[in-house]
Length: 224
Image (cartoon, rainbow, N blue to C red; front, side):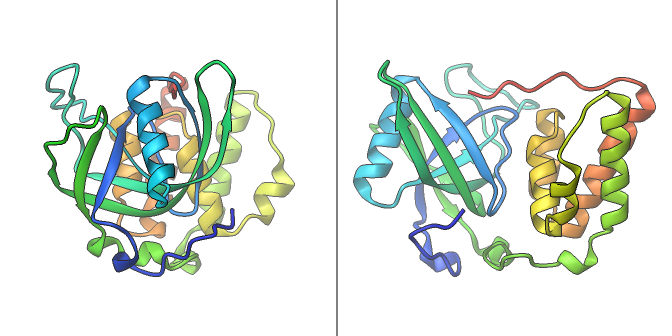
């Protein structure tokens, strides 16, 4: 989705951002994530992101292996910042938001803040390639990705717009499938932290093959 703002490198993003911890949520650069925002702290987060003008929210998963307190779970160290590119009010106190991914980030430190939502100082330096659209597409084994997807759909009696899939560029294909995949938090984190598109595609194929070998599908992930 086109954005009014241009982000051409790590220096074009702020080093302090609000973060939205959400298990099973995977946002990737140039991917779109719909969110149903209803908790007061995240309503405040959206309001502040809009009022500040930067319209940015960092999506990150709680670290299930090291959970910490329920009210303030420990976080994985890597997330992805997105820009609010669509927003609608529902009339019952909720926001329907769409985030468009910009770049992954690593947490430098979590800040002691008075806001209801959490904020972190982050770095984008190790993910400079995220700002280059379609980086590494030529190295993706597209046939393997399409075969894994086809096998998954057949095993689960699912249908899709196959023509649309075949027309999609490799980056859009791999990242969309990774974001929509029904795998758990650890698997989603591995997809997020993959060093390049080729590796992300390989992880996605491997996860699909493992699940197909089990003869069952993983449970659906619920997003807010």
